[in-house]
Image (cartoon, rainbow, N blue to C red; front, top):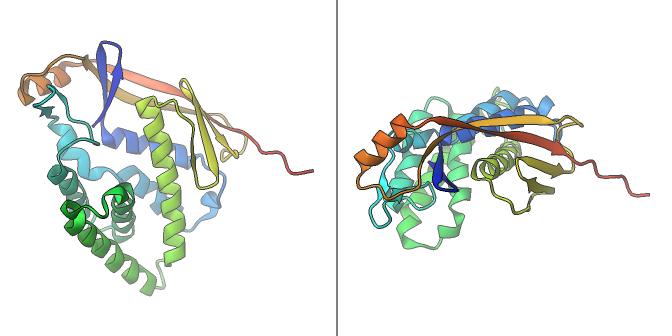
Length: 246
């Protein structure tokens, strides 16, 4: 769950809704050869499904007992964070290309823990899940997948994921990834160079608004979430063209 403070409320965004937003914005991408990639449909599906392992956690949100606040996806206990990605591998087992991209995403997202002994087994498992699938896809002449094309697809997924996370969290700091610079301004985010071919792309994601208070138990939180109204976070994405050097 994404937990976004908003005055005396928290806005809760499900990971599947964040991922759907990432896939939607990537469907508007006109740069980096995305429209003509043979793997475009798979890339969009992988972006939409990259957080499918979080469904169980989001269906049953829980409370950090030390704070009385909802656990978010960043601070959830290690064992539960790791279990998310193992569930994803099971759910995606019949879709090897997507499973490989999701495994690589897990390795990338948690790379800061690479030297932490508590994460060693997780990294070995996810690397194995990725490598055996990529190897099989590369040997299958019908798949059109080689390791360089796999990494190109993952770069697109990662960028869409970061943009969607920024919008869902309401982050205000500019950031750079690959050769793009992203600048949030309220509900509008501008990417330079322009990946949208001059179009202005609307975005929208559902959030549950709950009181920003101490929750005594998981049941207390879940009952509140179930009864909470849905707020719609929305805005626009746009690109800024870079002039050619004179």
